[in-house]
Amino acid sequence: MFRLAHISDPHLGPLPEPTYRELASKRITGYVNWRRNRMRHHREGVVDAVTAAIKTEAPDHLAITGDLVNLALDAEIHKARQWLDDLGEPEGISVVPGNHDAYVPGALDEACRAWAPYMCGDDMRHPVDRDAFPYMRRRGPVCLIGVSSARATAPFMANGFFRADQAKRLAALLRSAGEDGCYRVVMIHHPPLRGIDPVGRLFGIRLFQSVIRDNGAELVLHGHTHLPSLGWIAGHDAPTPVVGVAATGQSPGGRRPAAGFNLFEIVRRKGEWKTTLERHSVAGHVAGTERVSVEMLDPARA
Image 1 (cartoon, rainbow, N blue to C red):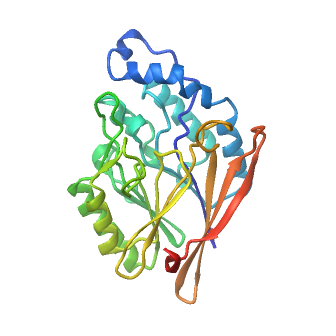
Image 2 (cartoon, helix red, strand yellow; image 1 turned 60 degrees about the horizontal axis):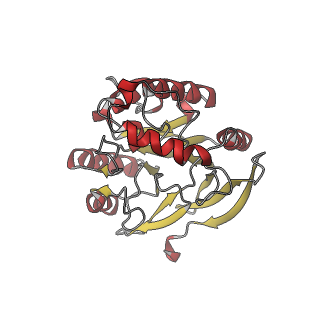
């Protein structure tokens, strides 16, 4: 059995005080939003409660699907690298960037440099940059494939993008991993399903879904919505589950679900993959987490 944990959108705080120069951009709107709204729902200790619970579960691997930071300030990005180092070794943690990690032009490049050990494939022979995606890592029977939908956008926009260059490489990786008999997990920040997030939607949903449908995948993980969710992408052999998770930094009592994590148990029985999803959520007092649901991801029920 392989146990895979999944978190997303920690939006690590507290927010460093930006300079006037740093605010002379889209960051000014994000800063105002942080001061008026987001900081009230991201209490100190929530992220720590989630990560402590994950360490107690001792999964074989941890997937993080973006938005580690808020305004992509250089200080935030490098603080997030320290957080990753404290969380665990790069071999056991795979990261893809989110729109907040690419908040302004140049931020994604800085994040790629800072978080490179957590965002590279097993065969990486060049520095990690925006063109290094998708990457693939094999851990036991599981192949984790990281796709980037992150790109700097205009103020009040949070869209993601999936284009032909990544599609071609993703298709090749999925075929290769499938031929090797791997359980294929695709990680992307923006949800690759329609109607989930109309404000920050993914441009290229149809292309992404066609790649999954034509080449196969056992699981797709995403973040961005701050919601625990389950959808499906139709496939030739069987539909692929698409799973979202509550934001790792969301305090209890807000308008969105409290922070939590997903824990997948992956086994192969009689030649078929079986996946069980456990959802865990922080308790009201933020002293720990509790398991709130368990379900089998059965394609027959899609």
